[in-house]
Image 1: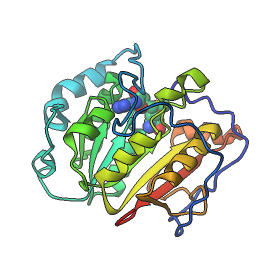
Image 2: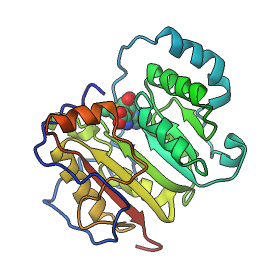
Image 3: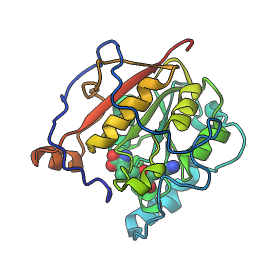
Length: 263
Ligand SMILES: C[S@@+](CC[C@H](N)C(=O)[O-])C[C@H]1O[C@@H](n2cnc3c(N)ncnc32)[C@H](O)[C@@H]1O
């Protein structure tokens, strides 16, 4: 979305299943000031509510499909089997934007349930529209801050995977505290994963990729599946935005870490 302005020179490999692990920390970065037990610095949001017109098609989808696919945010644990109408591996996506990758992944992985958070209403409408057009039934949406969803609706060990694709890079140093990938939130994410569950991040902003590698490598509950950056897993599509960036010579970095059974 708007903040993805990376002018990266290094390209990431573009294929296949992640090889097995060994972590490679890079330079050490500050923890951006959050106390260890707080998932994200209090009162500091990882997003700004953007103005943006909801199109007629998106509004129609919100009205017609919202009641079935959008869950209410509640400060109590989610009953995933009830929400999806079946028991299946549960993947959390944080910040799906307009839902292009989300809809693709849900279709190529019909056996998984995708719980997808986005605060931007036109994005929610856009994903609902894709759900309707493609008859997708394994997505449920929470139009709410994913940090609060993680804190209040998800129990330890409940997730099989987490997707965080192209999170806002917050380029300016004074905004780095808004970045999602910081030690306290990563610790919380790791705790919500089952042993063997994965955390997959992707970014096109090299300094944020380096921060991700450093922070994820330092989390005792996580192990890198690659030497450093991972090959792009097949399920993540190259979106229109990413293709354009790659054509312009920008880089994209994928990181895939797995939850250990014990630290
Ligand atoms: C740069 S966009 C990327 C969108 C999408 N993943 C993609 O690859 O196109 C980041 C998105 O994350 C959303 N976002 C940021 N922080 C969030 C949070 N805490 N909870 C839910 N959504 C969030 C923003 O509203 C924005 O739509």
